[in-house]
Image 1 (spheres, rainbow, N blue to C red):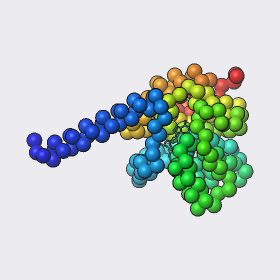
Image 2: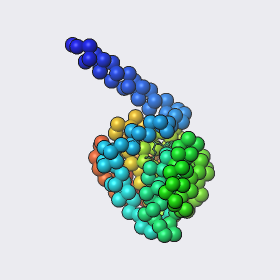
Image 3: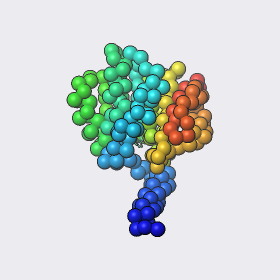
Image 4: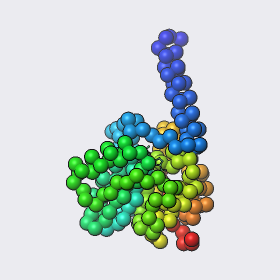
Length: 212
Ligand SMILES: C[S@@+](CC[C@H](N)C(=O)[O-])C[C@H]1O[C@@H](n2cnc3c(N)ncnc32)[C@H](O)[C@@H]1O
């Protein structure tokens, strides 16, 4: 084998070990995707594959109140805030100040007054109950060590009749298989509304079931 093939194999192995370790450690403590790695989601290929379908699957209309859990730098919060105008609002919540700082800059440039960005982690008890028509978690769930508590809180933040849209995409190292999301969602008081996509990238829409 040529030196080049060995080099490619070595780089692949190092990346594989790094991704596996990151994924495993994230089950124990929060190790979120840093802002400098967000180019993985913000490139023409990822945009075509995910961006438009994700927005369509949220079934947005003017006046809706939307919670973007793990909003990152506002990649989705900003277009959503436009789509719910007039009277609708978006709250973007994230645990990283660095992400929120970038999101605020982008929001300011966009001139949107109906987008609020706040430091709040799902599962920390900071989300207002019964306020939202929609919630979304896009490539976020796998970064949360206490997933059951996080989903329970997001469920309670929805209005009766509201729904949560969970999107998972490969090759995100924190990718959660649909079976895992279904099990967690069911335990947190969600019922399945719709499944879109395939194993490479899917969205699961989950309605808030009645009950405490
Ligand atoms: C891979 S990024 C995705 C960002 C955004 N959803 C998007 O698709 O552009 C995951 C984000 O989830 C955030 N995050 C991780 N755990 C969180 C939690 N418990 N509550 C809120 N945000 C969280 C991270 O800080 C990070 O910004």
